[in-house]
Length: 210
Image 1 (cartoon, one colour):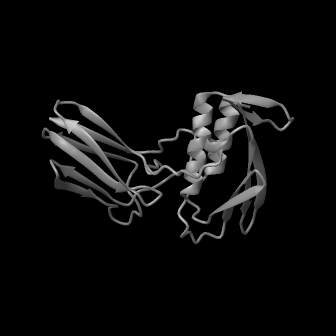
Image 2 (cartoon, helix red, strand yellow; image 1 turned 90 degrees about the horizontal axis):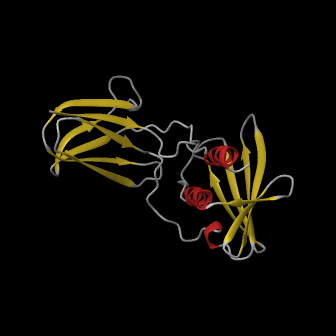
């Protein structure tokens, strides 16, 4: 018999935030097999759930991510082993075509982050530059650091996440992202208190670029 070792975890290893799930539907061969929901007084699912004595078949895990998208992950069970299943609430499917960073051409863009709450406020920024086929990050001392393909892809992914943050938040903390490019600005507000996108980006840059 096979086993499932289910982990609710972030797809981005630099994101230290906890993103809880409240429901996962499991299907076997297109028929409902199990519905996972919080037990007792718990408000959300445990981050690690296990099932044993599974029969062969195609299993599907269906859940809603942080962006309101329905995610479906399929696992084919055909061996007597433990299958590790990674469930990622932070994983975004949608691709936003209006990203500033991805469409830079021989120009620069600035992203300003501002956070305001009852007991705090802060402000920070980064500048990204494109010259021909190369992309650069302007460091605080004014020097340029070239971005490799992985770093560039991470920046584009981060902007995509920022632009898809749900707009129905009611948190007293307001995180504001302002993109400046060619004399124009574009502002995205996050009042969900469910994302730590800026701090995740800064952690990535600190460990990989700066």
